[in-house]
Image (cartoon, rainbow, N blue to C red; front, side, top):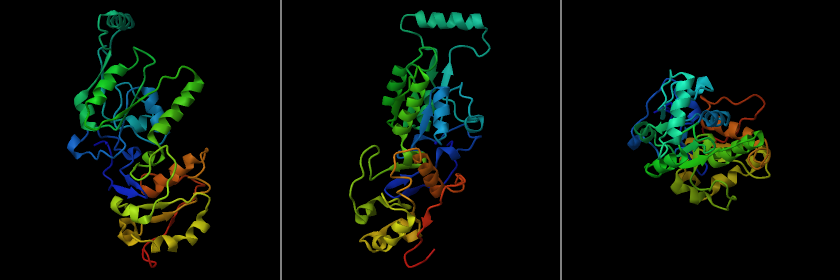
Amino acid sequence: MSATVDLPPVAVAAATVAPPQAAAAAEAATAPPVDDVDPATLRVISLLPSATEIVCALGLRPLGVTHECDYPPDLVRGLPVVTSSSIPADAASCEIDALVTEKVASEGRKPLYSLIMPVVERLAPTAIVTQALCDVCAVDTCAVERAAAGLPSAPTVINLEPSTLGEVIDSITTLAAALELVDFAGGVEVAAVAGQRSARSSVAALVPLAPEVLFVALCGFGVARSMQDVPILQAAPGYDDLPAAASGDVYVTDGNAYFSRSGPRLVDSLEILAHTLYPEVHPLPPGLPSPVRVGKKGGGG
């Protein structure tokens, strides 16, 4: 997403993890062929500047942006551009007004903006953020939906159309819910379903998923109490078959204070998870606790 730093993919708890978009190389301007893309990786394309700012504020870096996206400059600079405008960049105001009036009034509504499909296809997005609020501000929503329907990556189209400050805040929540916590940190759920309740499972059920990282956040338990049950986890059938157990990449965090509470500290939960998966690209903010690395069974590294 390449526009991403080449980090080794890992799998977390019941989630497959891919390099976080926040780590994308700023100078990269092209994307790999679709055949080289992991379809399970969260890959976001933003089709309007405001959506780009929201995506970045949520801790992600878009895979591709519009020709008008310019903020935050350190995150969008050098990203692949996925749209083009039929209005010359150096057109005078009167020319712009005439061109917009002509195209909007024309039969069949000639588009002011278009998707650069070869770039979009190479980027293989799994989510496209757009808007239907303004007819002259972005690529037509129907055109976006048609394009998405024809992409092998089968992206979800997320439509934002706030008209008040309150609705802008709601749209941030909408986008956050659509992309979800593990996705923000660079992962895609494979055993759980985003937005649905947790379900009872077993360690043996994780074996076919081959998680390379096991992240333990027990509802109602802090770290000290959770650590008491680590021997139970390690003795469970199938534990020794998990790649995470073999490498020692098993972590325990405070599920009671963070991951199990649907409040403001979910953002802190994201920070903790992202740091655990990619500490070299996502430093832990001051004041947040690092998860405890359990290590290999028997006290190995």
